[in-house]
Image (tube, rainbow, N blue to C red; front, side, top):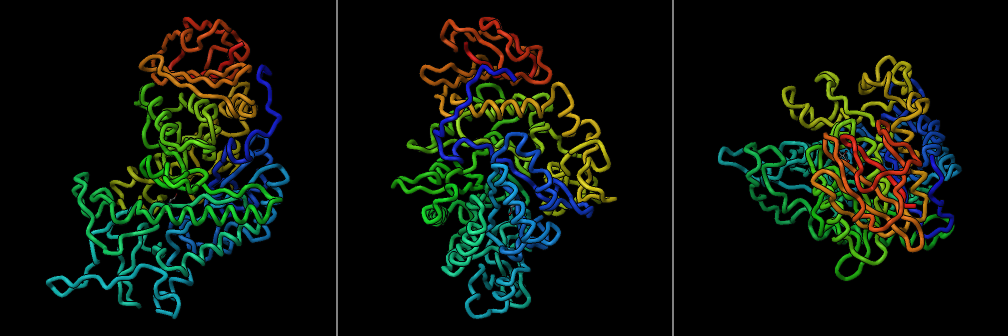
Length: 565
Ligand code: NOJ
């Protein structure tokens, strides 16, 4: 890459404030023992790749003991490693090796629910003293025919009633996800304490923090009122059928987030040799709520990084430049002032991949957007290559619980399997992911061409663009530069990062499928020259090339990162 941009050698920010968090889905990343399932030793063997890419923090989807009904989001022991993934020694080795390469490790913490195989649930079902109220139990109602029915109309996110009858305890229990994922009762102080102990256990093992799963589902109304209908679905068993005003986003959620923030801050203060321990929270919630997660009206701090899913939920391949600008601005407007940092999540294991949401031609532009905006960037593994969803997974190979609940006719509409297929390392069998005869999910057939090895060997590739962007992120301008964004036309938007007395970086993106001609002179507002810093793989422009700011032609879906000289 060209060396027009100075690297920022001063440490202006705390480690997490400008990091790229790279999400690893362990089951699909790299299989070291040939059973068709990714594992910890597999991840350790690929840490060099992660470091070479320029990543300094990884977050791992759950690696704890689990019956794998929801692929690790159903935990049966929070302090043990899932045997398919390896041993505690393998985990310790992974953390040591990662830290040796300057990579921090974040774990996925799943507090809302356990597996029904967790000891706590078995004890609670048997009413063992101290565990009676670990979960949310209820007698339900008796209908006219004398049959027991759930206490209300609450639905599970994954379809069907959120209540399941337990023969042993002769009561219903609440589950907001699968019936094998009973909801913990966070109104019980014993539960809160047990979860604190788990966090401290992993912090003492050297992790740099947690991604907290489904945090806005932690509390439900104690009155168990029926939820009002949304009018969005006619199917009473669908999650869209009602408005989740009694099961989601309750005010108590914020108290719990703030409680965990205190725990992390105290741990960091007592263990000053390590980094600031942080939390990232997963909640598909409203902007005002997420802003409060950062810091509430009283100034109490909560989540370091309430995930910003706007690029997943609020824009897509049909969005125009104004939609993008609006979505970027709205996060920055709502984020409280005073030291908070923005974050941008471009993908995860629950949503279609970038190439499938925006189209394969948009991969470079979307990575440019992600990497040159102010704050933290979150990349899902494979997005650096432009991996695509494998939408043709057969019903027989389908394993995702909501897809199985949807049935053979509708599973493709909701399945998360397509974005979870094995990572594509090379063009050998199973894309170099595994030596097994069958992998847990099929490999995308495009692996013969789309893989790490091929992209490293090519002169131009999505991977190389991604690497250049990560290198550029080290610059003072991208770490600290002020930010201005504008739609230049209906289809092209641009944003500028500038530091006083420094040069500026300008990112310009055409979101349409047609060539666009734009005039950038007013936006860059000075007489300096525009020079390409990073261009996409199909671009006619090369790094270092001067551009005509008054009449810049952009190919369909083209993005360019430029510098003003
Ligand atoms: C969010 C996770 O990302 C998803 O994969 C999981 O199914 C649910 N929470 C339930 O834990």
